[in-house]
Length: 337
Ligand code: AHR
Image 1 (tube, protein in one colour):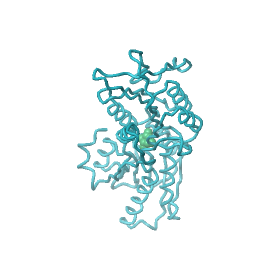
Image 2: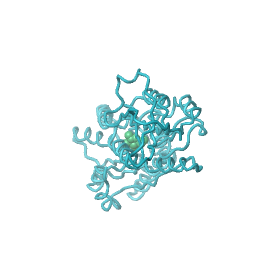
Image 3: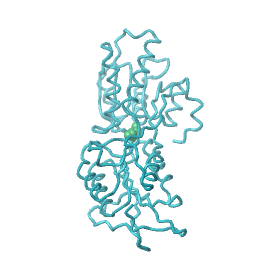
Image 4: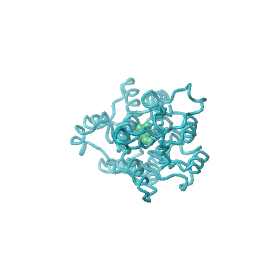
């Protein structure tokens, strides 16, 4: 779109080494369009990631690095948000100052984006929001691509509903421990709301503990350890991602608590990582609701359409599955993350 046709100027490439701290206060250089030997002008895409909080996130980052390659005509500027929302916003301003062609953002939280999105719009830089959403007027960005987090939460709770009915436990009091993701993140809000849309239909289901674990394994373990130390009785652990569930499992292992199929503790999580599918097959994890990290292709499609001057849809959902012992074996081999 706004590529400058100048040769030979160095381009700031932050890939791999992340967004270097010492550059935070420096004026970012203007990105000049680069061309391949074939004469193709590269499209410069700034990609601001949340950080490295989970294995899902690594898979999502790799998907972007493998999709937006030089061979395919892209100059990708990868920025690691380091789990810091302010750093992400600052990175967006820097990309605007560099006059990149497109900005893709995986936002940590929904709030705090309005001003920088307006600035990008004023400068004519299309912004694609990926994975989580933003609390910004939709006319200020090109489109959003990602998961239906509400549906994921609902699917998890519906699985629990069916399971309890199958076991003849639908009238029993069911005590639930809920490990939420990051406060203010769409993945947390959507999953929690989706879960409660079913939980609220069952007066005999009680959420006995609910804490944020920031989608990390370490915090999942820490939070679960705290709950166990308080001697809170529970029947179900729901973790809003697999890594927090792995942490919670470690905490339960430490205290000799058995969980999963054939035990008193029902285990439910989200993402469907390879390791989680393996645990589903073993019966340690009873269900993992897929959150598909391979969404860079949808962003690329949006960019290619915009390059051709086409109108694009505002919202693009990815396909997702619910994995239980019944349907997981076939997927384990092909799961790359
Ligand atoms: O926004 C998607 C969520 O973020 C994934 O469930 C989680 O693993 C990641 O860190």
